[in-house]
Image 1 (cartoon, rainbow, N blue to C red):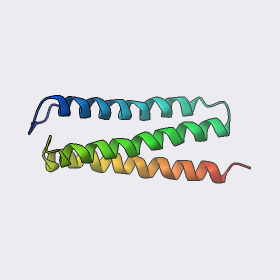
Image 2 (tube, helix red, strand yellow; image 1 turned 135 degrees about the vertical axis):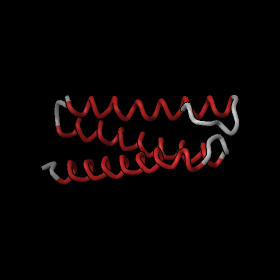
Image 3 (cartoon, rainbow, N blue to C red; image 1 turned 60 degrees about the horizontal axis):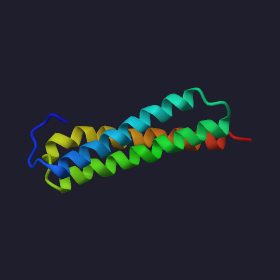
Image 4 (spheres, helix red, strand yellow; image 1 turned 180 degrees about the horizontal axis):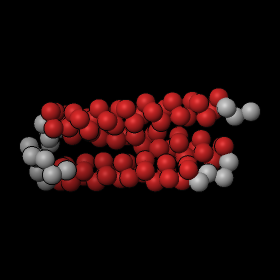
Length: 100
């Protein structure tokens, strides 16, 4: 996050680490899902990625609520994160419905 910070310090550093951790976990779990050894393994990895995407949305909202970044700066990333949550939810539902 190199955008203009409204406040700096410990809170900004903590939230930026949380966002990075959650967002990186999404990618790592999607990478693992592509190499899943079974349908349940695939669903598990997609489910974790979905959970981490939801967490990323939470942290982005908290950044705005804590006035660490202006809402207009965070909004594009927040909208993209919400779309990722929706996509992963749809993949998870589809994969679960195809397990038989």
